[in-house]
Length: 151
Length: 151
Image (tube, rainbow over all chains, first blue to last red; front, side, top):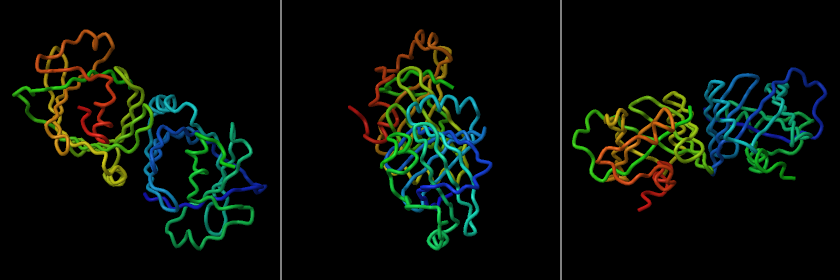
Protein backbone atom coordinates (compact mmCIF):
# COMPACT_ATOMS: atom_id res chain seq x y z
CA UNK A 1 0.00 0.00 0.00
CA UNK A 2 1.18 3.55 -0.60
CA UNK A 3 1.87 5.14 2.74
CA UNK A 4 0.75 8.71 3.45
CA UNK A 5 2.40 9.94 6.58
CA UNK A 6 3.29 13.12 8.46
CA UNK A 7 6.02 13.30 11.05
CA UNK A 8 6.77 15.77 13.85
CA UNK A 9 9.44 16.40 16.43
CA UNK A 10 8.11 16.09 20.00
CA UNK A 11 10.07 18.35 22.38
CA UNK A 12 8.10 17.29 25.47
CA UNK A 13 6.14 14.06 25.16
CA UNK A 14 2.56 14.03 26.50
CA UNK A 15 2.34 12.62 30.05
CA UNK A 16 -0.24 9.93 29.23
CA UNK A 17 1.92 7.47 27.26
CA UNK A 18 0.90 3.93 28.17
CA UNK A 19 1.21 0.43 26.74
CA UNK A 20 3.92 0.92 24.19
CA UNK A 21 5.26 -1.73 21.85
CA UNK A 22 8.99 -2.10 21.66
CA UNK A 23 10.29 -1.97 18.08
CA UNK A 24 13.75 -3.08 17.11
CA UNK A 25 14.57 -2.39 13.50
CA UNK A 26 17.69 -2.63 11.39
CA UNK A 27 18.40 -1.29 7.92
CA UNK A 28 19.68 -3.88 5.48
CA UNK A 29 20.04 -1.54 2.53
CA UNK A 30 19.50 2.10 1.74
CA UNK A 31 19.84 2.87 -1.95
CA UNK A 32 18.55 6.14 -3.35
CA UNK A 33 14.92 6.46 -2.29
CA UNK A 34 14.62 2.79 -1.34
CA UNK A 35 15.07 1.52 2.23
CA UNK A 36 14.92 -2.12 3.25
CA UNK A 37 14.59 -3.02 6.90
CA UNK A 38 13.80 -5.86 9.26
CA UNK A 39 11.68 -5.19 12.30
CA UNK A 40 10.89 -7.02 15.52
CA UNK A 41 7.52 -5.63 16.52
CA UNK A 42 6.86 -7.08 19.94
CA UNK A 43 7.80 -10.58 18.74
CA UNK A 44 6.38 -10.34 15.21
CA UNK A 45 9.15 -10.29 12.60
CA UNK A 46 8.76 -8.23 9.44
CA UNK A 47 10.75 -7.52 6.30
CA UNK A 48 9.81 -4.21 4.72
CA UNK A 49 10.65 -2.08 1.71
CA UNK A 50 9.90 1.63 1.46
CA UNK A 51 10.41 3.61 -1.71
CA UNK A 52 9.94 7.19 -2.84
CA UNK A 53 10.04 10.17 -0.48
CA UNK A 54 7.87 12.87 1.07
CA UNK A 55 4.23 12.58 2.08
CA UNK A 56 3.35 9.50 0.04
CA UNK A 57 5.67 6.50 -0.21
CA UNK A 58 5.44 2.94 -1.47
CA UNK A 59 5.52 0.51 1.42
CA UNK A 60 5.45 -3.27 1.36
CA UNK A 61 5.91 -5.29 4.52
CA UNK A 62 5.80 -9.09 4.92
CA UNK A 63 6.06 -11.33 7.95
CA UNK A 64 9.12 -13.57 8.18
CA UNK A 65 10.18 -16.36 10.54
CA UNK A 66 12.42 -15.90 13.57
CA UNK A 67 15.37 -17.72 11.96
CA UNK A 68 15.19 -15.52 8.84
CA UNK A 69 14.95 -12.45 11.07
CA UNK A 70 18.07 -13.45 13.00
CA UNK A 71 20.06 -13.92 9.78
CA UNK A 72 18.96 -10.56 8.38
CA UNK A 73 19.46 -8.76 11.70
CA UNK A 74 23.07 -9.99 11.70
CA UNK A 75 23.64 -8.39 8.26
CA UNK A 76 22.68 -4.92 9.50
CA UNK A 77 25.25 -4.27 12.23
CA UNK A 78 25.52 -0.60 13.06
CA UNK A 79 22.26 0.54 11.46
CA UNK A 80 19.75 -0.28 14.13
CA UNK A 81 16.93 1.54 15.85
CA UNK A 82 15.45 0.70 19.25
CA UNK A 83 12.31 2.58 20.22
CA UNK A 84 8.99 2.17 22.00
CA UNK A 85 5.87 3.18 20.10
CA UNK A 86 2.85 4.58 21.99
CA UNK A 87 -0.47 5.18 20.21
CA UNK A 88 -2.19 8.46 21.18
CA UNK A 89 -5.65 9.48 19.88
CA UNK A 90 -5.70 13.02 18.44
CA UNK A 91 -7.95 14.83 15.96
CA UNK A 92 -9.73 11.64 14.86
CA UNK A 93 -6.41 9.92 14.11
CA UNK A 94 -3.90 7.78 15.92
CA UNK A 95 -0.63 9.55 16.51
CA UNK A 96 2.23 7.13 17.08
CA UNK A 97 4.71 8.57 19.53
CA UNK A 98 8.14 6.94 19.19
CA UNK A 99 10.43 7.22 22.19
CA UNK A 100 13.95 6.24 21.18
CA UNK A 101 16.40 4.26 23.30
CA UNK A 102 20.08 3.39 22.85
CA UNK A 103 22.30 5.93 21.06
CA UNK A 104 19.23 8.03 20.16
CA UNK A 105 17.86 8.20 23.75
CA UNK A 106 16.15 11.53 24.39
CA UNK A 107 14.65 11.74 20.90
CA UNK A 108 10.87 11.61 20.60
CA UNK A 109 9.06 11.72 17.23
CA UNK A 110 5.37 11.52 16.35
CA UNK A 111 4.08 9.89 13.14
CA UNK A 112 0.55 9.91 11.78
CA UNK A 113 -0.68 7.79 8.87
CA UNK A 114 -3.56 8.91 6.67
CA UNK A 115 -5.92 7.27 4.21
CA UNK A 116 -5.63 10.13 1.71
CA UNK A 117 -3.58 13.23 0.95
CA UNK A 118 -6.64 15.35 1.79
CA UNK A 119 -6.80 13.87 5.29
CA UNK A 120 -3.08 14.48 5.71
CA UNK A 121 -3.32 18.10 4.63
CA UNK A 122 -6.26 19.00 6.90
CA UNK A 123 -4.88 17.30 10.00
CA UNK A 124 -4.04 19.65 12.88
CA UNK A 125 -1.31 18.16 15.06
CA UNK A 126 -1.72 18.20 18.86
CA UNK A 127 -0.09 21.10 20.71
CA UNK A 128 2.72 18.89 22.00
CA UNK A 129 3.94 18.27 18.44
CA UNK A 130 6.80 20.56 17.47
CA UNK A 131 8.53 21.11 14.11
CA UNK A 132 7.25 19.08 11.18
CA UNK A 133 9.83 16.63 9.82
CA UNK A 134 7.79 15.11 6.96
CA UNK A 135 10.02 14.44 3.95
CA UNK A 136 13.22 15.59 5.67
CA UNK A 137 15.72 12.87 4.76
CA UNK A 138 17.92 13.56 7.80
CA UNK A 139 15.07 12.56 10.10
CA UNK A 140 14.18 9.27 8.37
CA UNK A 141 14.70 6.22 10.55
CA UNK A 142 17.22 4.92 8.02
CA UNK A 143 19.30 8.09 8.35
CA UNK A 144 18.91 8.20 12.15
CA UNK A 145 20.08 4.58 12.32
CA UNK A 146 23.14 5.20 10.13
CA UNK A 147 24.15 8.77 11.05
CA UNK A 148 22.36 9.72 14.28
CA UNK A 149 20.41 12.95 14.76
CA UNK A 150 20.94 15.65 12.17
CA UNK A 151 20.79 18.49 14.75
CA UNK B 1 19.54 -20.37 4.75
CA UNK B 2 23.17 -19.64 3.91
CA UNK B 3 23.66 -20.18 0.21
CA UNK B 4 26.74 -22.01 -1.09
CA UNK B 5 27.00 -21.54 -4.81
CA UNK B 6 29.47 -21.71 -7.67
CA UNK B 7 28.99 -19.89 -10.93
CA UNK B 8 30.48 -20.37 -14.40
CA UNK B 9 30.42 -18.68 -17.75
CA UNK B 10 28.92 -20.90 -20.48
CA UNK B 11 30.43 -20.05 -23.89
CA UNK B 12 28.32 -22.63 -25.76
CA UNK B 13 25.22 -23.89 -23.98
CA UNK B 14 24.56 -27.64 -24.04
CA UNK B 15 22.09 -28.64 -26.77
CA UNK B 16 19.64 -30.44 -24.45
CA UNK B 17 18.07 -27.45 -22.67
CA UNK B 18 14.36 -28.12 -22.15
CA UNK B 19 11.53 -26.86 -19.95
CA UNK B 20 12.97 -23.66 -18.65
CA UNK B 21 11.29 -21.29 -16.20
CA UNK B 22 11.24 -17.65 -17.10
CA UNK B 23 12.58 -15.44 -14.31
CA UNK B 24 12.06 -11.72 -14.22
CA UNK B 25 13.90 -10.02 -11.43
CA UNK B 26 14.55 -6.44 -10.43
CA UNK B 27 16.97 -4.99 -7.90
CA UNK B 28 15.38 -2.67 -5.35
CA UNK B 29 18.54 -1.87 -3.45
CA UNK B 30 22.21 -2.74 -3.59
CA UNK B 31 24.14 -1.49 -0.58
CA UNK B 32 27.59 -2.84 0.19
CA UNK B 33 27.32 -6.62 0.28
CA UNK B 34 23.53 -6.58 0.55
CA UNK B 35 21.23 -6.98 -2.47
CA UNK B 36 17.45 -6.83 -2.33
CA UNK B 37 15.42 -8.04 -5.26
CA UNK B 38 11.94 -9.01 -6.35
CA UNK B 39 11.47 -11.98 -8.60
CA UNK B 40 8.67 -13.34 -10.76
CA UNK B 41 9.46 -17.04 -10.99
CA UNK B 42 6.95 -18.40 -13.46
CA UNK B 43 4.08 -16.61 -11.67
CA UNK B 44 5.33 -16.99 -8.10
CA UNK B 45 6.40 -13.66 -6.63
CA UNK B 46 9.32 -13.45 -4.24
CA UNK B 47 11.11 -10.79 -2.24
CA UNK B 48 14.69 -11.75 -1.43
CA UNK B 49 17.70 -10.44 0.42
CA UNK B 50 21.25 -11.67 -0.16
CA UNK B 51 24.16 -10.60 1.99
CA UNK B 52 27.88 -11.28 2.14
CA UNK B 53 29.95 -12.35 -0.87
CA UNK B 54 31.88 -15.25 -2.34
CA UNK B 55 31.06 -18.93 -2.04
CA UNK B 56 28.73 -18.71 0.97
CA UNK B 57 26.12 -15.96 1.32
CA UNK B 58 23.14 -15.27 3.54
CA UNK B 59 19.92 -15.63 1.57
CA UNK B 60 16.36 -15.08 2.72
CA UNK B 61 13.47 -15.21 0.28
CA UNK B 62 9.75 -14.82 1.04
CA UNK B 63 6.68 -15.08 -1.16
CA UNK B 64 4.69 -11.90 -1.70
CA UNK B 65 1.37 -11.12 -3.38
CA UNK B 66 0.98 -9.94 -6.96
CA UNK B 67 -0.05 -6.41 -5.91
CA UNK B 68 3.01 -6.03 -3.67
CA UNK B 69 5.18 -7.39 -6.48
CA UNK B 70 3.82 -4.82 -8.93
CA UNK B 71 4.54 -1.97 -6.52
CA UNK B 72 8.09 -3.12 -5.86
CA UNK B 73 8.77 -3.87 -9.52
CA UNK B 74 7.83 -0.27 -10.33
CA UNK B 75 10.48 0.99 -7.86
CA UNK B 76 13.30 -0.81 -9.65
CA UNK B 77 13.22 0.74 -13.12
CA UNK B 78 16.43 0.15 -14.99
CA UNK B 79 17.82 -2.63 -12.83
CA UNK B 80 16.04 -5.63 -14.23
CA UNK B 81 17.03 -9.08 -15.41
CA UNK B 82 15.06 -11.31 -17.76
CA UNK B 83 16.33 -14.85 -18.18
CA UNK B 84 15.17 -18.42 -18.64
CA UNK B 85 16.53 -21.01 -16.22
CA UNK B 86 17.06 -24.61 -17.36
CA UNK B 87 18.00 -27.36 -14.88
CA UNK B 88 20.67 -29.79 -16.12
CA UNK B 89 21.85 -32.84 -14.14
CA UNK B 90 25.64 -33.05 -13.83
CA UNK B 91 28.00 -34.74 -11.38
CA UNK B 92 25.25 -35.63 -8.93
CA UNK B 93 24.06 -32.00 -8.80
CA UNK B 94 21.61 -29.81 -10.63
CA UNK B 95 23.30 -27.15 -12.71
CA UNK B 96 21.00 -24.23 -13.43
CA UNK B 97 21.73 -22.79 -16.85
CA UNK B 98 20.53 -19.19 -17.16
CA UNK B 99 19.97 -17.91 -20.70
CA UNK B 100 19.59 -14.14 -20.61
CA UNK B 101 17.20 -12.10 -22.74
CA UNK B 102 16.75 -8.37 -23.26
CA UNK B 103 19.85 -6.16 -23.07
CA UNK B 104 21.95 -9.14 -21.88
CA UNK B 105 20.87 -11.47 -24.73
CA UNK B 106 23.71 -13.82 -25.71
CA UNK B 107 24.92 -14.27 -22.15
CA UNK B 108 24.66 -17.75 -20.63
CA UNK B 109 25.72 -18.52 -17.05
CA UNK B 110 25.57 -21.73 -15.01
CA UNK B 111 24.98 -21.79 -11.25
CA UNK B 112 25.22 -24.76 -8.89
CA UNK B 113 24.05 -24.75 -5.26
CA UNK B 114 25.64 -27.03 -2.69
CA UNK B 115 24.72 -28.31 0.76
CA UNK B 116 28.24 -27.80 2.11
CA UNK B 117 31.55 -26.12 1.28
CA UNK B 118 33.11 -29.59 0.89
CA UNK B 119 30.57 -30.50 -1.81
CA UNK B 120 31.25 -27.20 -3.54
CA UNK B 121 35.01 -27.69 -3.52
CA UNK B 122 34.97 -31.25 -4.90
CA UNK B 123 32.43 -30.54 -7.66
CA UNK B 124 33.79 -30.94 -11.19
CA UNK B 125 31.86 -28.73 -13.61
CA UNK B 126 30.67 -30.20 -16.93
CA UNK B 127 32.94 -29.63 -19.93
CA UNK B 128 30.59 -26.99 -21.38
CA UNK B 129 31.22 -24.74 -18.37
CA UNK B 130 33.87 -22.11 -19.03
CA UNK B 131 35.57 -19.62 -16.71
CA UNK B 132 34.50 -19.69 -13.07
CA UNK B 133 32.77 -16.47 -11.98
CA UNK B 134 32.12 -17.35 -8.29
CA UNK B 135 32.57 -14.29 -6.10
CA UNK B 136 33.31 -11.93 -8.99
CA UNK B 137 31.18 -8.86 -8.20
CA UNK B 138 31.01 -7.76 -11.84
CA UNK B 139 29.14 -10.94 -12.74
CA UNK B 140 26.56 -10.77 -9.95
CA UNK B 141 23.01 -10.42 -11.24
CA UNK B 142 22.75 -7.11 -9.37
CA UNK B 143 25.75 -5.74 -11.23
CA UNK B 144 24.61 -7.20 -14.57
CA UNK B 145 21.21 -5.56 -14.06
CA UNK B 146 22.70 -2.15 -13.25
CA UNK B 147 25.83 -2.02 -15.41
CA UNK B 148 25.59 -4.78 -18.01
CA UNK B 149 28.37 -7.27 -18.77
CA UNK B 150 31.79 -6.45 -17.36
CA UNK B 151 33.64 -7.77 -20.46
